[in-house]
Amino acid sequence: MEDIFERLTSLLLSKNSSLSYARARTWVELLWEDFEATYAKAGRDYQGKELTEKVIRQWLENYGSRLHEFAGRNPKYSHLLEDENDLAH
Image 1 (tube, rainbow, N blue to C red):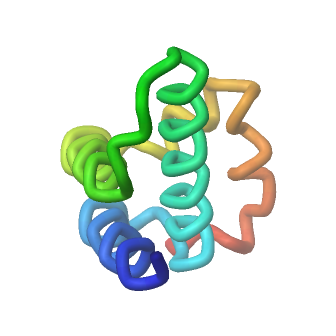
Image 2 (tube, helix red, strand yellow):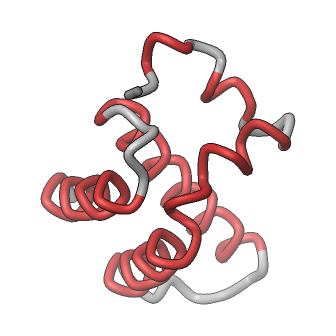
């Protein structure tokens, strides 16, 4: 799992220079957990980490550059941006 999270974190950092490594890693882990939980709540059979990685990679490719903007407008995720010292400038 560590290798997968590292690859996804690197991808997010390449798409979004506003995030620090720690913030990008947090986002990857949060998206991973949210996807798997939502998938399970929908009653779907677990398809393995390969499917989860594929979905998260697609999200990061499509939305990674604007992920920090989304968080600022969404109360569920806004706490991720409260520490201004954690953002890369």
